[in-house]
Image (cartoon, rainbow, N blue to C red; front, side, top):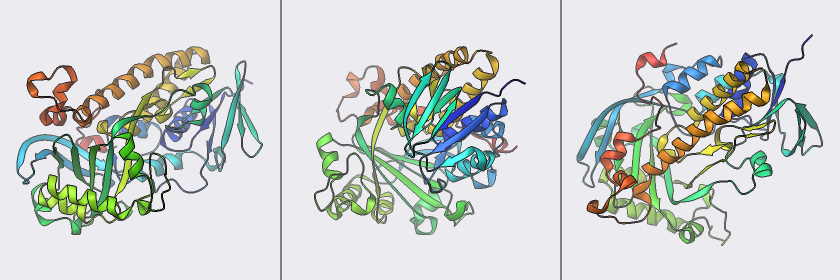
Length: 413
């Protein structure tokens, strides 16, 4: 009797779950190893959807529930007085991370999902690969899929010099209940993504599902993200708490110094329309995120393959990190199903996804051009400088070659 091939998936988040479900669908035996012991469903406040994400979830046997998506009808650019400078019709929908995670997790049997497993190193033995874990146990398979995020342990072992690179700006994020959103926003453009472009900066705000993924009017939430150029020295100061302890490139919201939060809210009052400034002012503990990106030069490393954020991280402007992980997993499953030889399948996967990953990272960098801290007069714009024009940003916001303009039909099985 022919032995079923076995894959070891390192990382039990979305990319790993997509890979596990899709490889199970082509007859592989799959075991997922997740470092965390707690539930992952609470990660993330909102999530951009694409047609490709919805279709890949269906293929993985994880139905996307239309009832937990908040539809949006377009983009608006608001000036400092709250006037609409430019509007663009564009159907879109925001959902929640948990509503992608939960169906995918249910599609993987508990017997094939092992929590609390911290990978220490990977060993390759010809056509076999062995994972060594911190508890002293090992697991062996025909393939190891690294879906362990942008700080991937697997990638660091094989390519220690490849990793996230600070983009030169940070994002301040916050969320509030719909009932607390200023009335002018609720009545004028709550159903749209509202962009603002203070000099050299960018923000956007949008509706997202509320508590327990409630999408009923009056029960949703309003989410904002504000991008600001920040030098590495200033970032270090932002990530230093009141006791002088530096937390690296991120800091837990409760440890952000009060004077830093006050300064952010004061700056918002100077730069934004009063209603949007009020949204930021009412956010008690905003979240600070240093924006970074990277691209891996290789995806196939013997019988080890990189997938999702372990392979490429694009800046948030493409709103497609989860969609990319889904498509990576689909491409890997297709390659393994279409090639009799595993090594040939991994080479095919690498060719296809290297190109896509490079293009999506490059596009995310273009969309962040106006945040590079330079002042370039329009008469001197060349190449990507066209993205200093907010109209160009709105036109191309999102990921190239993915369908963000979802209709109700796209969300119906």
